[in-house]
Amino acid sequence: MIPNNRFVILSITFGTVWLATVLAGDTQHFQAGAASSYAHQQSEKVTVGAKAYDTEDLVNSAFGKKIDFAKYGVLPVLVVIENKRDKALDLRELDANLVAVDGRHTKAVTAEDLPFLATSGKHPSPTGVHSPIPLPKKKNPLNATEIITRAFEVKVIPPGDSASGFLYFEAKAEAGDKLYLDGIRDVHSGKPLLYFEFPLRGEP
Image 1: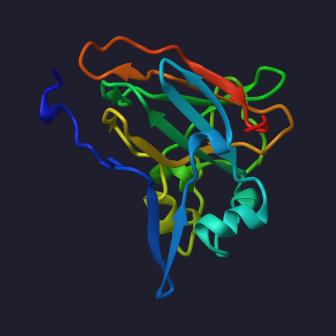
Image 2: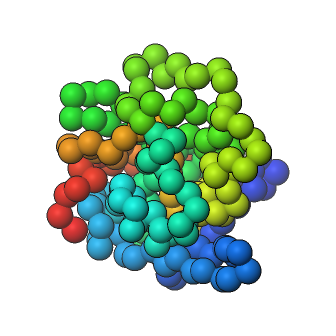
């Protein structure tokens, strides 16, 4: 059994997940759909669905109109994980990558690190080296509260439960992009599940 003092469960969802925030005095709600309503893959009674938010309309529907991710070379990807097993899932070592059709890949970036990314808007080199010069903190849209509150921060998914949120990649959306997720484990035994890898533009 995992000691409780090893980690804090930042978000556990029961049933349908709601992600909400306050925007300029107005409460705007964003609701993720079922994993199967997006491009998805199923393994060992776990379904992972994902959708790249690569258009202005999609970004506005989830984050409002003040964040232009494309301008800063950031691609948000909505991820939904449904656990139909009778055992909980441990996501503390989740490894998420965006994989281009030619094999280039980039790891997900935490919401807190987004303001410090380069702004090329392309898949980074395999070295993963970023610009050492941060973007200005003052009025930096990548410091927006919505980015943090909508991030995928779940550490444990109980049996029969689901969770959703956004992963952020320093990348420009390209045809053939795939999402790669590894490191999902059984919470008690620590046994890893098979990795998930599927095209983001696949059929739901």
